[in-house]
Length: 172
Image (cartoon, rainbow, N blue to C red):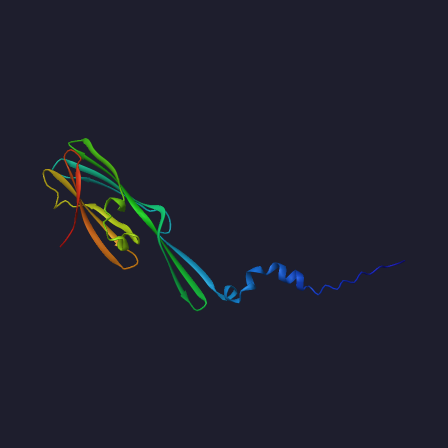
């Protein structure tokens, strides 16, 4: 019986290095990566409002897939990334049971020359302001939040009986 033995000069280095491409950089090998999305998934709030002045409104406030801001916090052996998503609101306003306005409310409607605020802001909330509403109009308070500067700006969205609207910055 004849046995043939083949000896190779491979010490395994080539095989080892082939599978360890992730660890070429020792920083990546020892760093923990964590991503947090705000909100974590799709978020939606639907509110129906009926006022005694013959106005009714439905707001559907919801998140989108648009990313407003990404913040990375780098600490020793950890990188934490926070991603903020944009919000919009679909608004339907009725006066005496007749639809007078159906509109998607986005921050583009409110933007002014303060680009620094708007680039990193999200719609924080929208709600009917029952006290500010009158016999001739319905008033929404719309709040925007700058996630970078932690600053809020409020607006009044005023809609009349025929669906015309205008916007005023809300000041206290």
